Image (cartoon, rainbow over all chains, first blue to last red; front, side, top):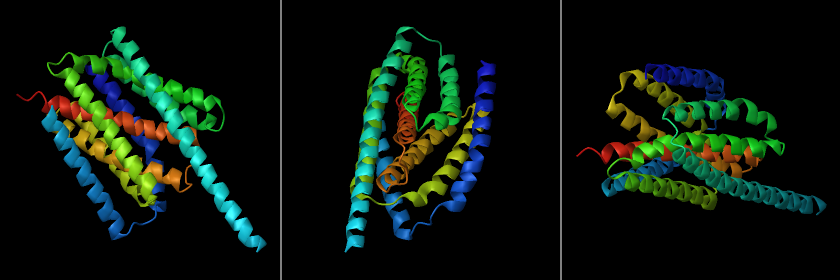
Amino acid sequence: MEWMQIVSALALVVFIVVLLPGVIDRVKNSPKGTSSDWMNFVFIMLIIIGFIMMLIKLV
Amino acid sequence: MNQQYSTVAQRTSSVLETNKVLRNTYMLLALTLLFSAFTAALSMFLKMPPMTYLISVIGAMVIAMFILPRFANSTAGIGIVFLVTGLLGFGLGPILSLYAALPNGSNIITLSLAGTGVIFIGLSAYALISKKDFSFLGGFLMVGFLMVLLAAVANIFLQIPAMSLAISAVVIMIMSGFILYDTSRIVNGGETNYVLATIGLYMTIFNIFVSLLQILGIMGNDD
């Protein structure tokens, strides 16, 4: 169904355009994290990745 | 002395306000999840066609982005949250029917549901207990989300299975980050509107569930 692909793409493009000002604002105004903040976040993400791998093994 | 009492009173009031937002958010979130489970079951029962997903998601996004913010401070906002989540649940029905028809479909759906629950509860508990400030993630998550949306637009036409697998994996990472970010905003008083907090957390749960379904669906059927 080609029309569904076109509608999906159009909807996503509109969503991106609407989202863009908010993204720019968030990038400009977000506080900077320390290296330990980022390490902590990366560690949490690694746990999530491990958990997803475990779910894949269970299928 | 009076100033000290005033500071303590202000802090107590702020903590009470945060607890109230948290309680209302999780209460509304639980109710909207139950409601969307009901609308998903209804959609499966009615055997809705796959295009229902696209129409429901577009409708829900339009309402959530343009109508909900205007009513977020009134009781009508709660009704709109149910409308958005009900629509998303209804759209999920045909997708669940497709997965249920696979040889190990029920296993994939159950694991996705359980996995989403574990990720959400684990990350929320971590943000609530540690009370860490994850506001530094704001810009990073928004840029990441934008990149994923651009990749998703490209893959609508490219139709590369490995790319859709990668997109789903990145969506789970980004939504996990949003759980930490949104929850820490509530805990640290950055978000005081439970209607907006609920819709934000609901969207993360919805996206993690759909992405997990896709990953487990692809990986579970490669033999």
